[in-house]
Image (tube, rainbow, N blue to C red):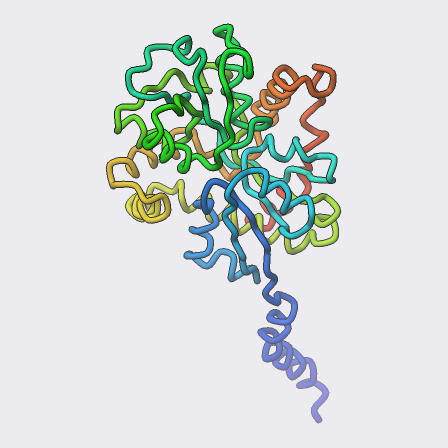
Length: 326
């Protein structure tokens, strides 16, 4: 064989084998994901646009009935990644759970039955929440505490599950007087003449709401897969906020959240208007609000909240963003 042709021959063989090598190095990995209250839109977008598939990721998504079930799934290892209100991660941090990505800021509102005039009207009433010791229930407790109302003394809290389900209950059971609701459920409620008694943004300031969390040990052992998953999620998040996709996103909101076009359009405006954080970036300042609220309302850490760094590991997110740049 002509020795001058040998390097060229090897070069050609390499490119013939390259697709096979890439396929072997990027075998499809299944991510077991749990979420609440529904399927996160960035996940749906990433699945439909192929952002996960081209990174060798298959997502097995299970929508949980309440935050307790979601926390149990991530803590006992039956799920790999959870997407829910960030305070859920704090509540089970002793299980080795760590936050790896942000998602959105809280745009919740305290929604009450038609005819309710003020927060004081909630005295002696039954208010419904997902779980009474975490996330948006703490927002509700704080907003009522400002008006001198104490949980268990001046009103009753009843755990009833996810946001959409709570609105269904309030529509059918008028004795369920109020609840914290997020878009688009809060928009649907106001369309049905329910009353907003205030927003968390006005009452509490920036509050880190939706984010992703994992068991830290699992994340370290599966770093490559987790980074690829986060990269696909971020790309789906970017796709949602790209104005070029407005019509498609509104249709997606209508389909996923079962809302009419008018409500979907309002929801979209909130998404691009600050509700969804760019690139699903974690906001440490907004997370400090979460910790301060838990310290004040639940008395955790002796009333002195720790720093955000105790619960957030930016390593995986930063690697995912770097992969997207490449």
